[in-house]
Every structure is written in C-alpha cells, then in structure tokens.
Image 1 (cartoon, rainbow, N blue to C red):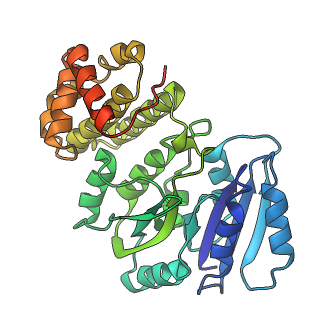
Image 2 (cartoon, helix red, strand yellow):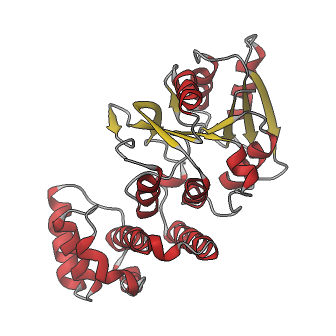
Amino acid sequence: MKISVVVPLYNVGSYVLRCLNSIINQTLVEEVECIIVNDCSTDKSLEIVNLRLSNYVGPISFHILHHEKNRGLAAARNTGLQAATGEYIIFIDSDDYCELTMLEEMYNKAVVDNADIIVADFYETYQQSDSYRIQTNFKSLEDYLENVISGNSIAALWNKLIKRSLFSSNNIRWVEGLNVGEDYYSATRICLCAKKITAIPKAYVHYVRYNENSYTNNMNKRTFEDVMTVIEYVISYFQQRNVYKKYETFFMYRKILLKRDMIFISSSKLQKQWIYLYPEATPYIMSCSMLTLYSRFFLWIACYKCLPIYNFMRYLWEKKHYTIDKIS
C-alpha cells in the first residue's frame, strides 16, 4: 500500500461529501486506502458516507471504523493511524477537501527525493474566496522545525505526507482529550525524528474556515488551556531528548503568540490572569519577528500591566476593523 488517508468523522454532514469526493476522484488511486473513523456522529455524516460509498466501485480501499463513544479528534486520529498500512500517511479533516492531484504529486515527490516528510502550501477557504498560504519557504529540516515550534509554520498534518514508520518507530501518537493544538504535539516530534524533508510549492488542501462546529472556530478558555498543555508536553519531550536549549528561543516565540491571542480575545477578568502567563517569554516580545512592530508594542504594553492603555488601543483597532467576541 502506497498511501493511507485518515479522515476523522464527527458531525460534518454539510461538508463530508465534498471531502469524500475529493479523495475518490484523486488521480492516484492504485494502492491507496482511506480510513474513515466515525467518532459517534449524531448528525447524518455517517449516512452520507455510507450512501456515497455504496455506489463506489473504484480501486481505493475504504474502511469505516467506529468508536463506541465520542472520544475526540485526537483519539480518532490514533485509531486511524493504528489501522493504517500505507508506506506514507496523510490526515485530512472531514470538513476540508483536496485538489485532485494531491496524492499523486506528493507521493511522486516523496519517492524521487526519498523524503520522510513532504510539505505543501494550502488554501484557507472562506465562503466567498480562497487565501493562498505559503508553507514551503524553508531552507532545511532544521529551519522547518524551528518554524513549526515558533508557530511561524502551521503544525497541522493535513498539508504533509509523512512516512508512516516515523510514527511507529518513535511511538508518536496524539494525546487523547486534547483536541486543540494536538498537531503541534505530533508535528514537532515528527520533524525532530525525521531525516529528510522536501517541499512542493503548491496548495492542495482547502482548509475550510466557515464550519461553525470546528474546534478552531470555537475558541474558549478550555481550548487555550489545551494549547498550553500541549506546549508543555512538547517542551518536556525536547528536554528528555536533551535538545530543548537548542530550540528555547523558538518555544518562547510560540508562548508569545499564544499569549497574544489569549489577551486579545479575552474579557478583562481573564486578561488579568493571562498577563502573568509565561513571564519567561516577555523579554522575547520585541525580537519576535513573526509579529508586526505594532503588535509587539501592543503586547509589550499588556505584559507590563498597562491594560487600560492596551484595551483603549484594542478598542481603536476594533472600531477600524471589526468587533472581537470576547471569551470569559
């Protein structure tokens, strides 16, 4: 088997048919399996999948696995990974969809370059438009790992074709119960363990941003706490491998990005809690080039407990752009 495509399934009735068709109609279909993991969907997602596959007679081998209870995205990916048999594996979210040449072009690139990881660009897809997101402007595996750690490159696995042996040889799994930031945990470990990475400067996956039920579109205090937990897990792993000091600055940048997001969309009560988070990262704010100078100054003001000034500046920003729904 060349490629395993793992698709977690949970309450995506409005989107899953498009996702499924984008897999069925791939230009590479020989020696491809698609593992769909139903995480106890309560809508018509499974019914839609079954109906579509009942009419499918092509060479892709489809498998539908079922959880006895809802266990979350991380668990669904673990289930799919455990069942996979392909030389390479890719994880596609069931509300996203793919360009039809994705598997063929990424697999051919993997074979030619003998690569462990193949990274592509992606589309951030809204209801009326696509926004092209470049992810392939790295110079080496080391450079890419630094980008992923810092948050400068997306940690998601749906724009990466990965040699499956990287997971099995290094015991890489997702932490069940953590469903936001979960790919940061796996992607950083995969990059640390890989020997060769290659890039295709072309977008294949449409990352849908208008599904109101998706984890990333429902940020709250718990989701931020999940991301904080994942960061600590990754730091602990790097410390165990005796390589944390080498990447410490990039972990500080990741903490800064998280802190910025938490303070920016939080109510005043939570803001007072978040400004004390990650004090060790505060000295790195002004050197964090991933943020504009304006954003760095914004965050620096907040972290040095000048919240009234910060919130006034945020008010002016919102008045010019749009209102942020605060979390409490």
